[in-house]
Structures are given as C-alpha cells and as structure tokens.
Length: 113
Figure 1 (tube, rainbow, N blue to C red):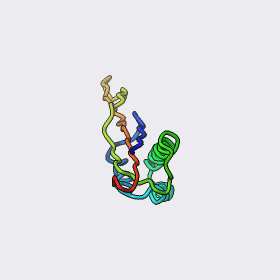
Figure 2: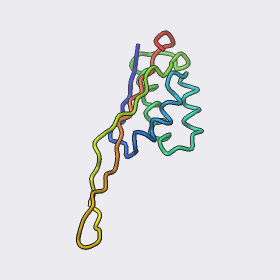
Figure 3: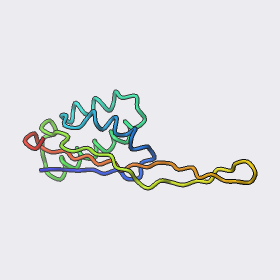
Figure 4: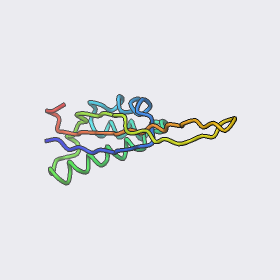
C-alpha cells in the first residue's frame, strides 16, 4: 500500500526544498511531521502540507493506521521557471527567472521502507 501527494509549481528553488526533503526521507510520518514543523526553512510549509495530504490520502483511501506509516519516497523536481522582465540601463531589459518545484511525497506501511 502506498499513498502519494504531489504539490506542483511551488514558488521555490528545488535546491532549497531538497534540504528539508532529505531530512524526512525514510522517517516515520510522526517524526517527519515534527521535523518539518520545527524547521525554520521556507520550504518546510509546502512540504508539511504535502506530507499531511499524503497521510490523509493513506488514511481515507486505504484505511490504514497513521502510526504505521513511513515516508517511502520524497522527491523535489524542477518545475517550469516563471519569467519576468526587469528594466535596465540604456533601455535594455533582463529576464528574471523565478524557480518552481514539484514536491512528491509517497507514504507506505513499515514493510515498504
């Protein structure tokens, strides 16, 4: 049994989000929730919401005990960059690229981790 949740186009650099994701990969879901709640990183909020969604999906769709769940897979992939124009000197323009991320979290029972 595996339940997953995906957050797409999160306005955050994948490199910065991976710092938090690496901390919760393979952990018990209760411990992973504690880690993201206590983290001071900006990435912790969307990762916490995605983790809570994956836990709710497992609980509602597969009727499993939450205490038996483990974070089986947790990845952050690069999304499409948002492009904006920034006026510069002498009538020129620069492109400002805002990075986005796709956060995927899969939870499963203890035998799968």
